[in-house]
Image (cartoon, rainbow, N blue to C red; front, side, top):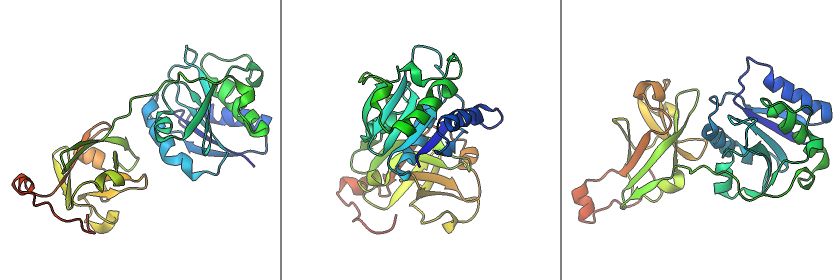
Length: 278
């Protein structure tokens, strides 16, 4: 049984997601459908790209991921079918697969040009229903990508925000996602942090957090903390509160991590030895 996941900005108040499921099940009623997320901020391609990146590796090989966050629907952008190490990805050519390209997950990409696999007539405003859903269903039956179009290499890729290292003791990153709890998920990975001498302190929007905690409840309610979250990156949170609201932080805000020693000690070479605690 093939799994097809759906990641959209359609929300749950309109029938768009249900209609896509109906199209898929009408072609292949044996698939298993998984709602990955339908709460992506409207038109927010970068947010969708990040969420897909954090989720795809937890599905069985061969899973088909359908991503419809498509502000350019009906325009010149192409519908794509990407073949990855772990599965297949159906998405508009608008950069929503950028994290997967950067990670090396994507191996080949095809433009969807074989109209016999689409629903007709094709709406100018709902390619999720008329192109991506039926192609996903047919792909689940056929099991290979080559019938759906020719290979392409000139795909759109978003310049992803990186992590800057300053000297030996400072990392500058940014908030990549704010989850529904108000936790601030950054692009600073555990591997990035391992390059800094310990102990660390995290600075964001005037707040300084000393070290990392082992769990959310390791600090008192209402206090800000930092932790390595489930995405494998630094996460700033407030125990039983919203860090986004309390600190008034949005996606894109700068995050600074530095080793907690004075500049004078650093200039003298008195860097602390690596220890076990954050």
